[in-house]
Length: 171
Length: 146
Image 1 (cartoon, rainbow over the protein chains, first blue to last red):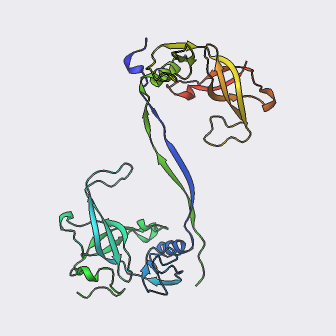
Image 2 (image 1 turned 45 degrees about the vertical axis):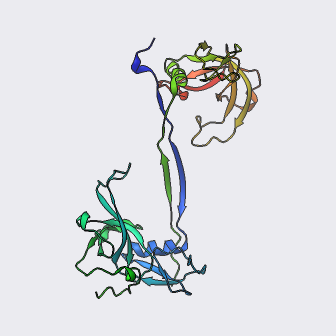
Image 3 (image 1 turned 60 degrees about the vertical axis):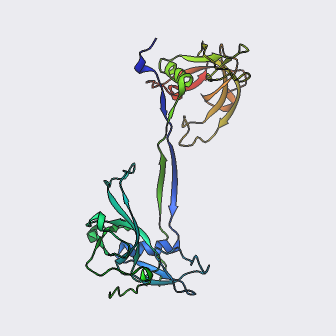
């Protein structure tokens, strides 16, 4: 009879799904600009909403979006969560802040990290700005922006979040 | 404005599952590690390989393990002309239902053979063990013709 420790009680049964991911026309345009350090959205010809990253159509109007709109790297916190539990495979150590941010000049939020902040002081309406990697490290990736950090501007009232022009927030 | 090229890149999604074997499949795996193949005796006397925890007819818990041979015969097979990356063999091979000596039901495994024409229902095959056994079905690397 075998030793207790030689008895098999479990097996590894991993599943690996290998894809070739194609970004599509509108996301390719977004990523190509992002590699140059430019945040580019697209405006709906019907309702004028600016989407970033653009998918090439307006979800509300069902029409194609063609017009590129350059956006600011300043943004407003629309909502956020403080992550306290480590995520397998994620190198970031908790607690950290993940937020829905609306870039100035756009009308839809994107998800990114907040850092250089007191987690307990993060709030809806808070003004933040992207902290970029050095230009030499830029790639076709949203990780060109390491994270967003708070900036010294007054909070945006709830009804104005997502409606700021690319020129920013006067307070 | 000119259209940029359409970007694409490879992307792998991995689910790194582990599974508990339970006592019966655990015993089967443990025996594979020792280069033995075991089945289990069902209520009607049939020897089932790989062993199952409950009787297929009465649903009674089963516990009588029976060692079976590492040779057997092909009950049916399907030839794989172009093996895929996840297949156990990278040359053309057969998936086969193999009834091991002492077993009453066939077990699926792969058979290495030079060509499809070398295989036939009823052909005798023998287990080829992996150089290092770890307690997994791949401890039997494949079957080969006797």
